[in-house]
Length: 264
Image 1 (cartoon, rainbow, N blue to C red):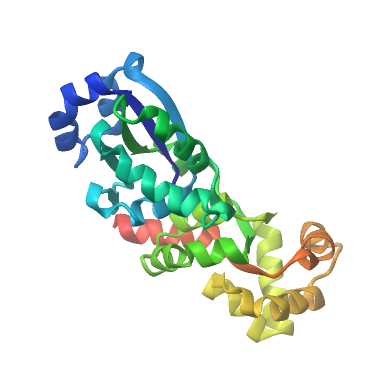
Image 2: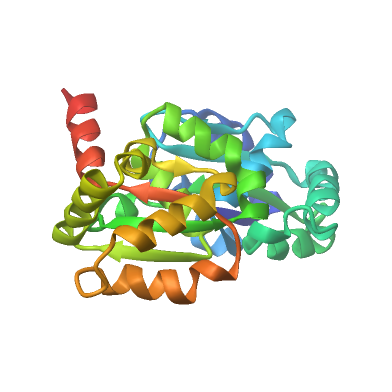
């Protein structure tokens, strides 16, 4: 799940501050935005799935709201409190600590000195359209630096069995991704079971750290039929040798089973 940082004119922010704080706990995002009014929003900056998680982690004094079945990612920062937000962004983002995952954060960081005292910041989760996109089986390769930054968040989502959220986080910050039809995914899994049962366990583990990368890549190369798995074969030859990655194995059957289980 991604989010957006809305830069709101200070006079409008202060007029609505108390109401917004109350609404942030449970009101629909569209209702919050309608209350503010588009004419009072100076800018809207998209934050990728990992960006807002890192931002929230260092800004607990602003009482961010996130997680849970409602899939919220919300935080308010008043115009007279921007100095603290900017200080944290400066230390972590502009000093390259967050460079592997920084996209919208860079824009937000550079906007802060100009906005101080003039604008308030409201962060809201994106709309739910992403939840209804057709899911695909995927193998995502995540760079080592990115994995080190986001590993606690990957692990937390895995423990919560929030596989939709985990897939979004993995693909948002992956260096490369291989997509599989259901037929090819099941064929790959079966080939691993028959030829290398130990390798087949990665499908159930889902998230694999970089320290196991070379062995898994070697194993996949030995079990696949290039004619049956042309996309994976191409990725193994072209992309896999470029580095050492963490891997996320996305199985949409598991996602569906968990969704049905939680809904019942």
